[in-house]
Image (cartoon, rainbow, N blue to C red):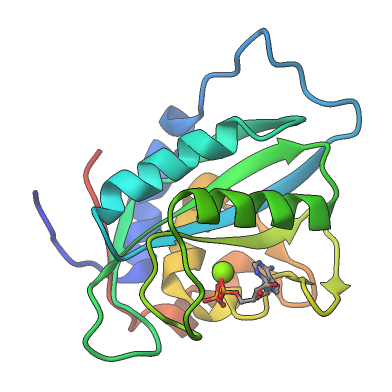
Length: 195
Ligand code: ADP
Ligand code: MG
């Protein structure tokens, strides 16, 4: 598999072109819930076949109750943050229309993490699967269990690049346009993987 490295901004620009091709087919049998929210979710893994884990996790998101998966970014290979010596991560971002409340959605994401064998050992530990709720409509949430927008999302190339691929106009409540954060993360190693 090719592993060319690119800057976050170049990666996002190249990927823009392909964003429209990556929409997940909407099943006619799965109507949108009556009350629909737009959530963006970050997927990440760096243990036990992370490519397969992230792909399977996207499929699991598509099966969440009262929800419909709208789009999934390309997969990205990225440098681990926080702890030296870890394997690279595979990351992606998904857009989900959902009738679930934000905390309900967080619990559903934790349930998927557990299904994939995630154990919370310590902060930034290697993980089979990490699912983070990035954005939930334009909500600002600051509760003990959940902070939205995700407090570090604007500082992470592995979030900003795939987010911009599927939502070039995305804005981060309290922080402005997501695209404006590209320069801040442009030194972080990230490579979009071929389809
Ligand atoms: P991280 O994703 O930051 O590497 P974890 O996945 O272990 O670390 O999450 C740590 C805690 O962060 C969880 O217990 C969760 O309740 C909390 N949390 C707060 N806001 C969010 C969010 N937006 N998405 C996911 N988890 C969140
Ligand atoms: Mg997490």
